[in-house]
Length: 166
Image (cartoon, rainbow, N blue to C red; front, side, top):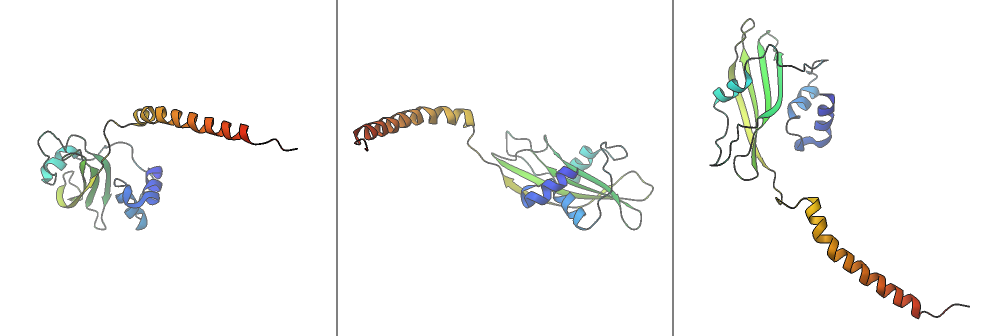
């Protein structure tokens, strides 16, 4: 988690999932140690589905299939549970993705939480599908070799025509 926090501070708004960690750190609210399991948390996927916040995907896409992110389980000053989630979702449409921040609250002794509020925004991660480095290298290497041969040949001809210095 310390690496993710450092990444969030370094890259700012480009580190979506780390936004929550950076803000809690700014307020000095991060715990000294991080848990690596979800023990004691309610069933998160069902909680998220029941919130009604997830955006609807275009036909052929499933934005809720690849939810991932950070869950912060904490207690407020009154001792009530506060569960904060920062999640990226799957594609809504071509190269269009959602990012969700959700807050759930619960009573001191109760394990259940209820939806309190959320915000959602979208980002695009577009590229040229199929044009990976190895494909581009193949297309550029052939003209590159030809151009290099021509430049080398011209250079050798110019060098041979120069008179020898005495």
